[in-house]
Image 1 (spheres, rainbow, N blue to C red):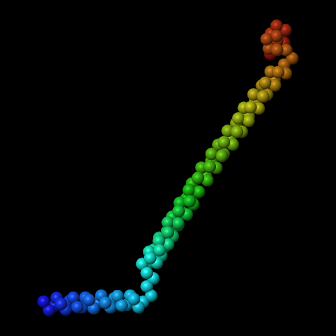
Image 2 (image 1 turned 120 degrees about the horizontal axis):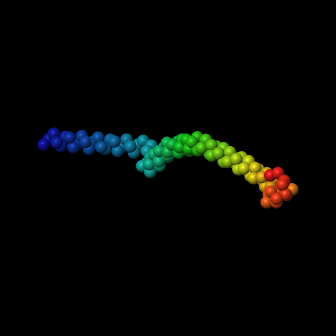
Image 3 (image 1 turned 90 degrees about the vertical axis):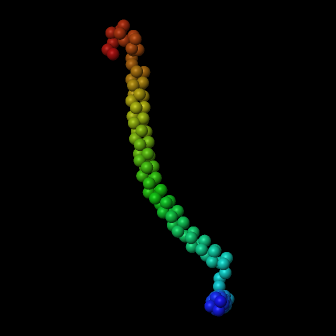
Length: 109
């Protein structure tokens, strides 16, 4: 029984010493510790977000440029086809004699 009481007394003295040391030291308080923990934990998240944004930029810029090159090539092809069609229409309109009449009149096609 005596050793049990001694253990409790020793533990009580230790607890009291820890509490006293905590009261004497500058303790920022639980709320301050929790807020500081949130601030520090936000920094790695911001770093990850920045890294993901840079990575997305590195991936999407070449894809966008390639799509833009394809659109430009399609525009050039369409412009050529339009110019050829316009030339054919102009040639058809500038005939001295309509095609249907050319056969009857003996004019070359």
